[in-house]
Length: 611
Image (tube, rainbow, N blue to C red):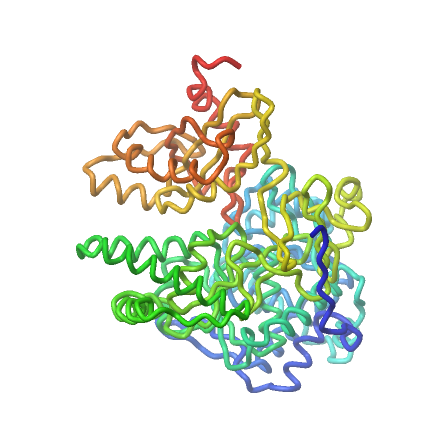
């Protein structure tokens, strides 16, 4: 199958622009709690109703207008994920502006480039450091200025900005709010650039409306007014903002968290029904359970529990497909025992109420998906890009197939090119980049070129097979797509990133970039230490015991691929994974930068080998 389409489930005609989503929800359910906001006590949360949120948005929008923001002006928001981010996002649209999100981990050069390329006129910061970066970037422009969210001393606050709008009438605000139409820009999102320079993707109000209305219609079982979620992805990422809009429009309660240390304690308090995570989070949950079982001398029991969960997950998928398969008695008995021992405790860690988890941002291992399905928490894997306004495809409740990223979402078409590239067209696909030069190679026959390799199965589901730019051609002329091998190795909690190398070389090798926390714990338990390197350094380490520990993982990955795709040599590597030049804000490794910094290490893997 080379193309698959899903018809739209919702019409956009009744909505003028994105702001109508909030206005209508507030009219329908003004007293419904829309947000949980951290209170002064770290263990408590303050509810915010839809009407109160709308009031905060309208007040700040008036302040922006009073400060001189004109329709179409760009507003940069650089802050961690928090309630004020949501207010600033919607307020900019109410004031007729265009949102330019900036990752809070961005460097000074990145902030400067984005601010100047987008033509930012007003900036909102989450901290003193963010305010300084934005203010410096605005020097020499006709910008209105920079304001900071609450708790930043010495910088004008959002309360100050709100105060600028006391003379702006409700009628003036309503006129400004309704100016933008479907095809006007809503946001300019700069791609994180794993392989090249960041590009400003212009997403319209129609892009957001199309995604929000169609996804809400397709996932009615997941996004409900009685449900709640925690957003801890960066709100600078379009997936988090899209999720937020879906929740606002559908009435799902939202809490924001940006500090990883607060996530687990918050789960038991907020008890979410739905979570969005990257696969690494699921790997760490499973690995933590395995470590605890090992410390209790229950390692073999845990392994049996894992295989039982996978079997239960596989059976559930067969039942989804309409096969009336009853679980064998032995599987039912083992499932009940392991539920009491392990599964119920894992569900409790996640708050005890999670109905579904959405996994995105990277490929999810099929066995991991089956494991969580088997413990009673189905994982919906999806796929999308900034340029598709986040989700393009997704598995659906009751129709989950592990190892795939599901069907096109309503209103979308996925096509596979003769070269195997995934092409996209639909309600969420953007019209182009801010710089038209970047559009030249971005589209073909009206479809956006994703740069990803994939295929469509007989059921119309998309299966991803790697990035086109990551393809390796060895000196023997073999073309290798490294994604499957790398994904298998990254299933180890000790390996944060696996990077296969071998372009123009006689055989394949790999850099195994260690997870800092997991490798430090391993070293401590084995009486070893890894000396920390200089910031930005990608440094090979010589630890034979750890290498021997990971050898079976590499062997298992090699067993999954053809002989020509197997890795012959590998090196363990420590890297500064907080370095924004090395890792994107969504935790994807910048392969080109890794290869550059590790050039000497890579050379040692081929020392003595003929080119």
